[in-house]
Structure formats: C-alpha cells, structure tokens
Amino acid sequence: MKFAVIQFPGSNCDFDLLWAIRDVMGAEAEFVWHDEKSLAGFDGVLIPGGFSYGDYLRCGAIASFANIMPEIKRLAKEGKPVFGTCNGFQILVESGLLPGVLIRNEALKFVSKWQALKVENNQSNFTTEYAKDALINLPIAHGEGQYVVDEAQLAELKANGQIIFTYADENPNGSVEKIAGIVNKEGNVLGMMPHPERAMEELLGGADGVDLFASVLKNFVGK
Amino acid sequence: MTKVRVYVAYKASILDPQAQAIKAATHKMGYQEVTELNVGKFFDFEFDAEAEIARAKAIEIANELLANPNMETYKVEILNEQSEGAN
Image (cartoon, each protein chain N blue to C red):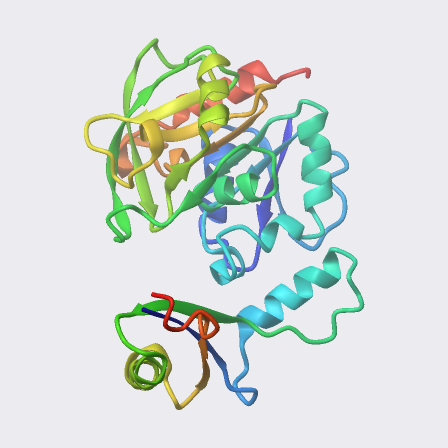
C-alpha cells in the first residue's frame, strides 16, 4: 500500500504523519503537494493537521477546493482509506466527505495536552487493533475542535456505529456527545481531532496511535 | 428600540491575504469572472435609544472598539428606521 500525505500551505503535522506511517509502520508513503492533480499510484490518503490557508474564511474551507481534492474524493469513493487528523478532519467535513462541522472550542481557548479517549467502535477499519471499549491517550492541540452536527445526522452516526472515538472524562472542546472522531457510512474515511501520529513511540510519551495505523494496514490491504 | 448594523472592512489600501485566498479559491472552483473580492464583518446592535442617539453611540463604539482606523473603515446603518416609534 502506498500512502499520500497531502501538504497544504500551512500544514504543520505533515512530517509527523509521514514519519508515523513510513518510518514507524514501515509502509510506503510520499508527500503530495495540494496543487497536484493526480493521486495515480496511491492507495490511501493521509491529511495532516495544521492551519491550511491560515484558517481563512473557515478552517478547511479553502483547502476543500484545492486541486488535489477531486482525487481525494475519487479515492474515498473507491473505498480506499482516507484519514484526516485535526485540520485534516476540518478539511474532510468542509469537503463533504464527513458530516457535521468543527467550530471554536466552547471555552474559547486553544487546548494542547494529552487527552484520554474511549474507542467507541473497535470494529471499524481504523480500530480493529484496539480492544473493545479501550481507553487510550493521544495528544490534542486545537482551537476549533468542537464537533457540531444536527439531530438527524447524529442519530444516523449512532445508528451506523460511525462514532469511533469519544473524549473520556472531561469534554475538552464542547463537542456534541464528546465526539472526537467519526467515519463515513462506508467506513473508509476517518476524521478525528486527536493526533495518533504524535503517539507512535513510548520514548516520546506514548504509543497509543500505533494501533490505528496498524488497523489501516491490516484492513485495507488488497482493497 | 433601534436596530443598528455596523459594517467593518479593511481599507482598500490594506492587502487582505484572506480575501486573496478566497478569491483564488473561487477561481479554482471555475468562477473566472470574479475579479475582485473583499471580506468584512458586520455587528448587529439593539439600542434602547432613538435612532439618532443610537447611531451616534454606534459610531463611538465603532471608533473605539469595532474598527481600527489605521486599517479599517466602517459604515453604520439603521435597520428599523421605517418602523421607528412602533416600539
């Protein structure tokens, strides 16, 4: 499997994400600049955190019209894994690949810390390597991570098991139902505010992100 | 009660990278006809005061808080002038 790590102007977790998938997990991966028009030869997309286009207009709004986006949508439609963390999540909701939207944290403060999370669904393509109801720790670092979705879509997320991660203990940003990460109905597009790519080695504070990438490598091979 | 809307935007002489980025996005979407795009914001007030007093207060607030005269301009609009006196 070969992964594309998309770089937008203002991405700042791109190197972490490439390091996680390539150096730690041993998968094939390359940077792809947002202005490229093809993802030919790639089997998966990783969208990093950061502040694409300076968060102008709304977080992720301008990135969702970048030249590379039609190709990301094509891979998503083909059932290939598409993963977005932090600003990558914001881009996925703005581009319509995931429902809902992310707004300013309820307490109006940027939060940057290790956060306890609950794996709500360990049957998804992104979480099979986690134990059922596992409690894990991943870093969060965002100012606009309050997940908002209307009642009907929330009911659908619940009914389909699309809520993958929730914040354990306190809610750091006011997200509805403490939602930290969701997948699309088809199960191949994951967006989450926490940063699994920053939790890949015990030496660097924790390795709870490894199982997410291990799940992807296991469940999407040959698809 | 008077409803007042204050519009604030950059002066034409100020380069606004956000507006430039949004304009570039409209071109990527295929709207090549877009030649200029400016971004601003508006503030809706309700004043417990008559229209002319409300306007004067809004101008004070705009000068002191909402706009920075070094780089921004503002415009004050009374929204319910027609129904003045009805409340």
